[in-house]
Image (cartoon, rainbow over all chains, first blue to last red; front, side, top):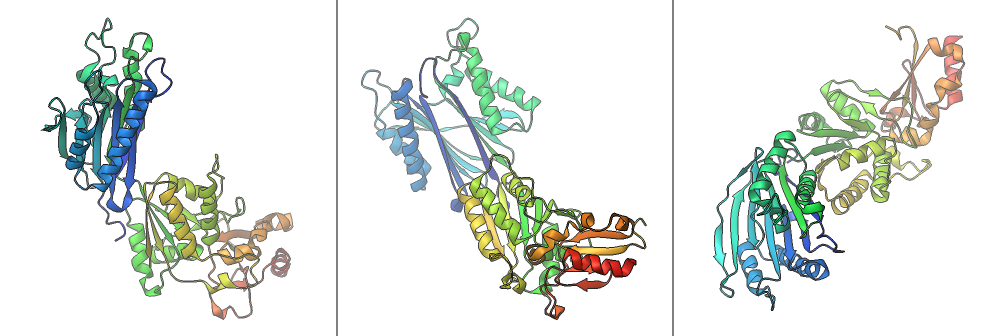
Length: 393
Length: 88
């Protein structure tokens, strides 16, 4: 039901730096969301060597693992098969590529497998907390093993994965003879959380990469440096109420459901706005002048945005499709901005039809609200990777 | 009250009214004689609910409400004529 969703949103951010003098990255990361399963899989792979060869090895390994893990429900089994089948370099007798994979659920449950990459950091309340791995040794290669973990994440917990280019940065130099190491990284990350407790995934990943690079003499990276951060957070949710309910005797029920929703709220439709205003006894004020080709916004206490209905929704779909560099300063532009600032968007779509919208004397054809919202759902999900749910009332 | 005693003009900006010409009515304030400004209070409304009302008879969108009287098929001229009646 609307507003009863207790799942979290998984944010992800990555950053990379190439080895000095190479023209491509030898590490590779990939992630994919599976909205129906409320799941996200993220992989970070470090290819042997650097440059093109490493890039191909890492990309192949990461892509294969992602697809294999997605198809195979059992992550541990999938990872073990990959570990046993990854080839060994003829010359160096070590793996072609190492990997870390996190199979994440929006409920907070996460399964992690690491093979050859540095151990990840689990960050809770700005501090790194220890995690005990279960070791699985390869049956085929005695020197190869993987660390596996099953962890329950709390809200605002983060995971940080990195390639050895981070922990070994500065290695052999005058200051960091043994490299920056895991201890140095933990110290840095904890200090960053002290300074910026709500640091974004993208920002933290970038800062770790930049910091690792500064450990290198003359900032020339001796290896590829990659960092990937995941964050389980409260979704930024938005409820859009558009169109009056089919049964008018349920107006009050839906108006209350709307106003009590935990998250941002928008109303698209004059009749809908009046309905909420009447049921909750909150006055509406309307701006006088249209902006662009749309009626102006209205205002009501406790509601973030009020617009006209089907014209504004149709225009918003247009903006979502065209993705203009600068969002126009009209009601549809404001609605789109609200969409883009939300992770989970719920539409409460009233099924009542206004006959006057189908008057043949109208100078333009008005679309059915239901169809506009369905197109909107498709584009928000597919192009903008939002979680969208529709409720027809 | 600032608007007390003024003639109240409310322009419907619902979907039907907007596409049927209410967008032009928004210019009313600039098109009426400037000396009326102190006598007329113009505001917009999300929807006056008239288009979905089969009792609106032969009246059509766009709708404008002047004090308690509903005007259908409203144009700037029609509204100015009505205001003239009330002011003069």
